[in-house]
Length: 371
Image (cartoon, rainbow, N blue to C red; front, top):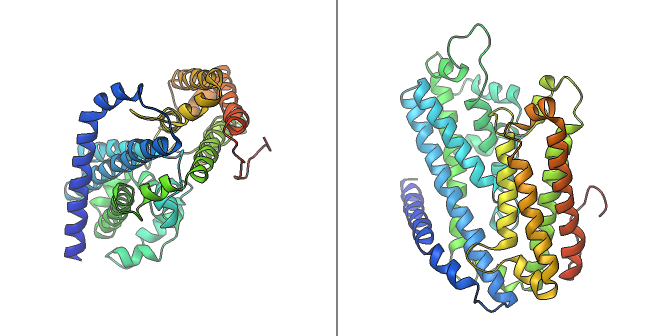
């Protein structure tokens, strides 16, 4: 176990160093990208390195920060360490949301998607785990739990549990200083470590230079990888449009009784999650200091490429301007949320119809509306 821990620490160090190096050279790379001759292979190389690999390096770094904050919280449970852990959770969730536009590769191969994206955790079952007679929660114990009681969003459930009117301190702080504190501490740390370890392994998979590594497979995929990129991008935009913006619009009143149905409402960051997801989708389309899907579209239709780029900017501008969690905006400024949905829906149609046609792609994911 110590050997594995040391290996993971070493890998994290290398990945964080790679991230810092990437930031230093990004400006130089970007200045060269305008003169880069387009080829499909070069586009896939750029996306694999600049977007997918670097994105998981960022996730790994943020998840490690979260784990460190959880350790500080259990060592000294107070409002300051709880606030720090909450901020670290938001950072990890934002980094993860930016990668929702591509959920293939190592995260799917290792069957770890639920660790980072399954948000419908069950508070009652989590409380059942906490009330179990076993004091220690280790990896073997976690392996026998379902996705509804572990992962990134189980941590959200614990960290952001609201206090009742007769409580003087947040529930988690009460538990961490109460009779069941050892069980709660080990549970928090075990979940945090699993999330961080899995993020580090996926980041290593994407940054491996082996011929059998994730990047090499992605590039060798050629048109199949292009098909995958477009399908994943379309599915991502559809998810934002239908399962976030439109979903909140059709929730029955009173909204206050439906909060458990809104992703990231526990942490009050439902809007931040949508913005991060759209930012990640835009990054996949534009590339990051190199070639992206927009360059492939531009080879076929420069006018379409500009329309999509403009629609990304318009959509993100409308969504960002909402300025408050979705569950609040739908009550206080419903027309603005409706407008954001319409703009996101327009972007969705552009991807699912025009980009698919321009690049000769067949949609293979199960679309909600049949477009």
